Amino acid sequence: MDVHTKKQRSFNMSQIKSRDTTCECTFRKYLWSQGIRGYRKHAKMPGKPDLFFPAKKLAVFIDGCFWHKCSKCFVKPASNSQFWRKKIGNNVEHDRKVDTILRKNGIIVLRIWEHEIRRNVQSCSRELIKRLNQL
Image: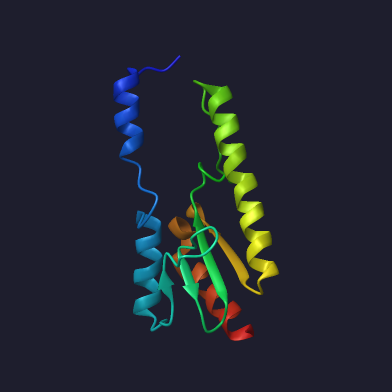
């Protein structure tokens, strides 16, 4: 049972951002401070990666731990569990399909979890730089 009214829950959900989240902004600011350039924000391609490096054909997704079902952080909601199981399951399946489509088109996919950026943005940046240097 939800503790909020339907109207309040609808409002709360409408306030959740899908672009330029705190983690995305933190990561981009750190990359910029390290002199990492050459990426596009929210490229118009399957899955709409958060960052895309066209010269290297590298797509970066910053996945929210709840919305994309992080194996370390995800906590199943107690209320409306059937809805959330379907919603989150669809998100995970969509991620898999997007990864497959991008890889078939020669694009390397890097997925970074929200908790990884919160815990150690430098480590996430090093992983990205390592990938860029390999390409």
